[in-house]
Length: 392
Image (cartoon, rainbow, N blue to C red; front, side, top):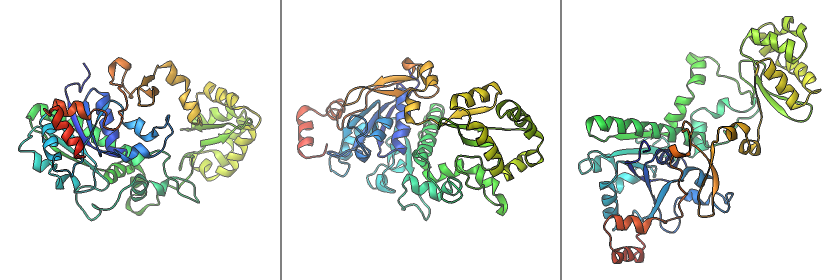
């Protein structure tokens, strides 16, 4: 039995934050019923066509779900939702601020009839405050949270290459729902969860905020290098590769000079005799390191670093991650179904094997509408009438 096997989640979701949260609930065995707009569905279905004609974002965050098309503004939708929620444990939504409440789907509106229902609202800025109604795309929250100010080069800020603000909010929604389920097991009562992308990212930004506490200067943008430790970051090799390495203390600096650079005299050079001095003399030290690495291949540099027990990594592209030997050795890849055939998918972190997670197909739009309505007590004619009225 999977941990959430008897839990039913109804979700009014789109894009990334809420779908990422609910996919993880599905991974643990929850039944997740995804409400989608008839005809078009979750707009993330159309972000691109990179996975055999399907959207890369959508296949990432929507496996193991059931798709029910329902026009929430149609007169018939309210009854469908009430019947769904009679069987549900969790309602998740990331509609526009206030939209769920206008549909009668707020925690306050639902709690009397569904006292055990957990309602999780995910938004850009939260349910109140002066920013409540501002649009909140991932990049915008990266900017508002200060993430862009410390990410990139000295000349130009850079955003994260993945949807980090959406992921942060999805993770906090997921963990709060798990906590609420435990709490409900003790009290019998559901509760409301209000997760904002801004607050999630602000929590993740606590180190640079404390670093600049009380008016102190913030960490400088330093590209892929560390802002305050050196050498720590990317260095090119003679065959065009890039290795990322990091030194944490003076013992490692001594070993690095002796075994990796094979220039032991540098360890005593007064320009580099402490981390602060090495950081101040980055240009000079970088030139010396690159001079040595220019005569070596990436594999030779990594071999020297590993032998010296200096932390390092290759700067992999996506192709190298797909074929990463560690992921293969730990059997982290499984196959999942899609409307376009099977594709590889990673097992969720922490899950030991495919038998310990739900890894069901990505649904086609409205694939489960008829079956779910029948389960809710709608007969064939009633379902046909709902379809004819474009309610589902």
